[in-house]
Image (cartoon, rainbow, N blue to C red; front, side, top):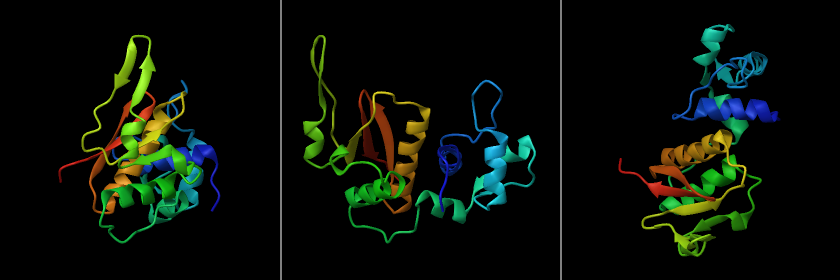
Length: 173
């Protein structure tokens, strides 16, 4: 099922636990009501009605998750496998060398700054992704959703951003 960028964005917000699906307030914040209504009519979002208040309470459906590429995986033995599967499902366009796992994480954690090299502590990091320089809330939602999907595979983790990298850390259950 093909989605526009705006439809995909709205579904990611609905899937995320940390961000709210909002209807556009006229100031460019939130999603256009027509986009949300089209997702409800296609069965990708569930809402009690098509008015603004109901759309902000819309929940993603199983069909909406499938449209994003989310499917149920067997629980992998390793958190790194869960992360790799989640990234492939939600960010299929990401190049393989952009996801750094295991020993490769330490190689990407040094950044030259005006006052010398900056280091980021990578203790217990499952993986890291280099993101674009134009990092924004939409990208933050995407990486939060990746962590949520990996968590649903049995390996609780969270995503955090430090400069040009997004790190995935294990979480206690």
